[in-house]
Image (tube, rainbow, N blue to C red):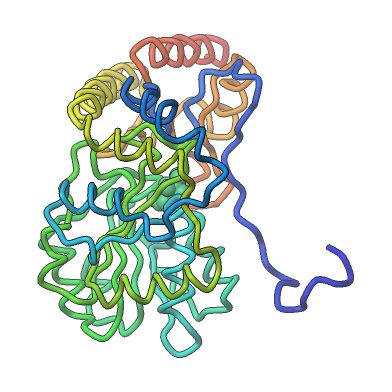
Length: 355
Ligand code: PMP
């Protein structure tokens, strides 16, 4: 830290992203990317349409992409906001709606960026503990008198709450914004998007990074009432008006036009998830039920940190946190069948060695 850094940031602890080794020598099951490349049409769209036009700024309103998303989800263009990854969207949510008076509440075990934004904006944040078995109790958020952000499915647990439960939270906090982060909704969960037309205080956040195989393109979006979308727009035009680049916009439109390819990939991931869980069961692991493209699992014979390091030494990257509540556990992204077989083989090898 230099002596010039604003004192406001003296105790800020920045978010630490998962490891992104650039030599690609690992079986990479640590940051919940899709194991599948984008649909072939995405490559064509990016090549043919946009590379020669990179001298020109992109459309700051992202009209063509917002129209495609609005058509796909059956909402109006005025209900759609685009961001450079859902991380940027979360930034705008915290920036626009949360302050010293109107704080924010989120689960104590959830996406690690929420506390970073709370700290960046110096917000009174309420971290609500999960219940037994990492269960999120919707009642804990009803009438809470703060803005709320909940990942559904939650990360890193993979557990979900129902649309009815979300409606209860939204309805009971009419004077606060409820952001439902649906980064992992397309792997067997049920989206709360149908509630958007009914509640002006609900924002649903999704990403192209997981189900749509576009983590490298950086694209997230929110769907909500036109008034909330207008507020997010104000944040965007006050910080970075051209937040989505041309190549990503062209890629994303082609992605939406090829939905079947992605739905099919999601089916394969869900099959691989069931397969991996049943193989881990046989090895004495305890795995939480997951509706996401990852599982949260622990092994009775080897603690989480040891398992993470032993897997890494064998070329398989998973995610582990030193946080006390989850220190025994590892989060494992569900990849292709081949990747999961390598992961399982390495786990068996490690168990043979320790036991
Ligand atoms: N929300 C959750 C719950 C996440 O786990 C992640 C990333 N892993 C994000 C949002 C951000 O994703 P992105 O910025 O790639 O859209």
